[in-house]
Amino acid sequence: MSDKDRDLRCAIVGLGPRGLGAIEALIVAMAGSGITTRIDGFDPVEWAGSGPNFLPEQTSQCLLNIPTREVDIAPAPALKLSIGDFEGWLANPAERDCFPTRARLGEYLAERFSQVVNSRPHGLVINRHTARIIDLDSCDEGLFLTSETERYGPYDEILLTLGQPETKPDDQMSRWLSHAAKCGAEVRPAYPDRKLLEYARNWAGRTIAIRGLGLSTMDVLRLLTVGLGGAFSDGRYIRSGQEPARILPFSLDGQPPVPKPVNEDLDQRFDITSAEADAFAAALGTAITGAPSDALDMICGGLVEPATRILHATGGQASVIAVKDWLATERENPGAQETRPPVEALRANIAIASGEVAPDVGYVIGQIWRKLQNVLRGGFNPTAIDTDTAAAIIGFDEGLKRYSYGPPLRSAQELVMLVEAGLVSLLVADDPDIELVGGGWRFREGDAELDSSVIVDAVIPPAILESLTEPLFLKLQEKGFVSALPDGLGLRTEPDGRLLGPHGKASPRPSLLGRMAIGSVIAVDSIHDCFGASAKRWANGVRSRRSG
Image 1 (spheres, helix red, strand yellow):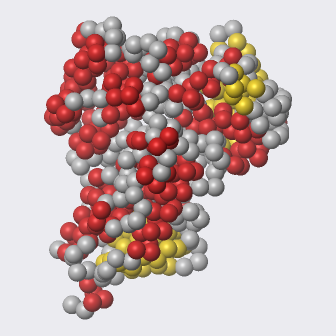
Image 2: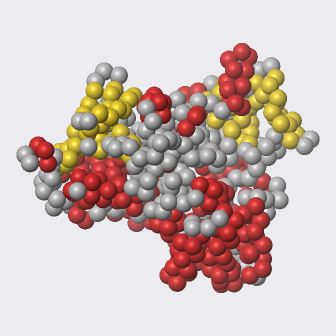
Image 3: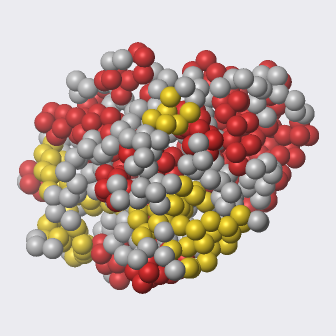
């Protein structure tokens, strides 16, 4: 066999954090193999490594939902990079408990990508292309990629790490866009943030609605206030005069996400023991082989003991029965336990997150779930799970994201200040009736009735194949490379990321990691997942196939 025949030819489409994680994992997996690894990376985004979510050029108003101390994504020692973990790169102990900007993490990832490319370990060749890939095909020679102007290949392996592909608007959004075009109202996406800020400079004195009440909405609120010259000072918001007159966030349940503990000392109260983590892992291992209802029973059973222990240790008033009752309701109807008005619930959770009062059952279970995310991925992702069981577990995880993906305490406190200043209203936050009217929309909830001339969409589209408009995914579907899971889940993949078409296995075939594989994997909306076991399984699979 010639040297050329021994080369591994690999393409990675998407050079954000997940693409970077895959490249690093492949370098480690192929080390010592004696095979030259040639990687072509494709992404039109200027900042390779950061991706659009962490662009270094975005504003300082977009924050991570984890503190610096939890950004645990240090490169593998085998890579021999001079850059270390994110906290060490910041070199500022004062930032340990702070929630850094997405832009700052993007700078770190971009520098790390540059070091990986320039490190040039023996047997590695990396070429970066800014072309946008729109097609993929397979023949006897291997896999090929096509951009608008060029064809690339052949490749032995192609990995797709595109993040959120282009998606057509849902029925509600389609109606709103059509209405806005006719009446002169506006519908704008939350991102890119700088583009939204440009639009917002013309919204002074207007009423703005925000579709969604999650983490993206927190970014939008900062953009429409501090981004327009306002300020938070001495527990209140000071207007600049450039911001909207009123902002109306709304969602299906009307409840803001729950803030995380304010500092490391407070957060440690919710740590689980090794024995509790092992017990949960064992319960999960049994659950993923069972029926949907049995699976959730077992998973929830693994949360009862640590939740009860932590509640007693932190002064919370709860019994085993109370914990079980809360979990039973959560399984059937996520969030239904919260019956307080949004502002009242927000203030109560702020008091818990700041350590002023003892945590309640929901807060404790939510923090435990956050700390079990790696265990959850470790049990779920490498396993072929019945579709209905997978959907049930994912639904439970999605419901608890109001805790596990909660914002910094600062964001929740700022939201209260904006409500107190009369700038934000949550009167129509809970799944309001929305009427199309001249000049925009009328929101009704109970006795409240408010009009808006702008809607900002802060909802991430679901990973539904039929909704995609991204040219590459349309071609993949047309050519039988992909098949979708039911119930609004994503694409079918094997545990190592290889895509499954409608007729089962085909070879060669591309692989997929990330959000579009939700259903085959779980808890993918995390920076940790980009550098975690999924990337390693894919890389080890590549080596196994190439060596075999």
